[in-house]
Amino acid sequence: MAIQKTTFDLGVPWEDTAGYAQAVLVDNWLYISGQSGHRADGTLVSPAIDGQQGDEQSRMKDQMIQAYLNARAVLAHFDCTFDNVVEEVVFAVDIGAALAVMREVRQQFYLGDKPKVTNTIVGTPALPLPGQVVEIKFVARR
Image 1: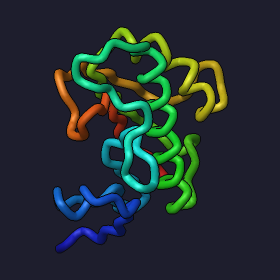
Image 2 (image 1 turned 180 degrees about the horizontal axis):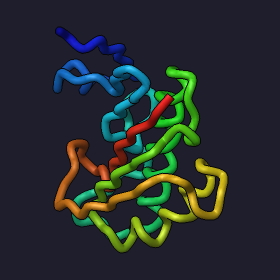
Image 3 (image 1 turned 30 degrees about the horizontal axis):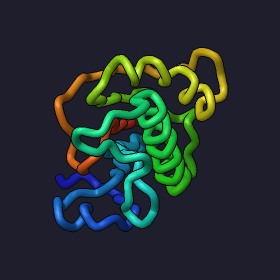
C-alpha cells in the first residue's frame, strides 16, 4: 500500500535540478527539507566569499533569519506555525558563529525564551550553495 504524500516547493531552481520537494506531508507529519538563507529569487543573503574575511556572526545571523523565514512560508502553506515544529537540525560551516546567534534568532520565530522543540547542530565543511553558511531542516506535526 502506497503512502499518501502531499508535497510543496518554493520554486527555486535547485528543486528541479536536484529532484526533491521542499516539504512532504504524510498523515499529520510535515517533513521540511533543509532551508537555506536564500531569497525567493534564489539568491543567497550575505553570502560568504572565498578568501574574504568578514563578520561571520552577522553572515550567519542573516542567513539563519532567512532560513527561518523560508521555513515559515513552508509551514504556512500547510496551515502550521513554529508551534507545530517538534524537531530541527541546524547544519553550520561555523558552529561557533551559529551558537553565538542561534538563540536570539530562534526566539524571534518560536516566540519564547526556550522553544519547545528539539534541536541538533551539526558542523559541516560545506553546504550546497556557494557562500552558504547554514541550513536548517524541520519536522512538524499538524
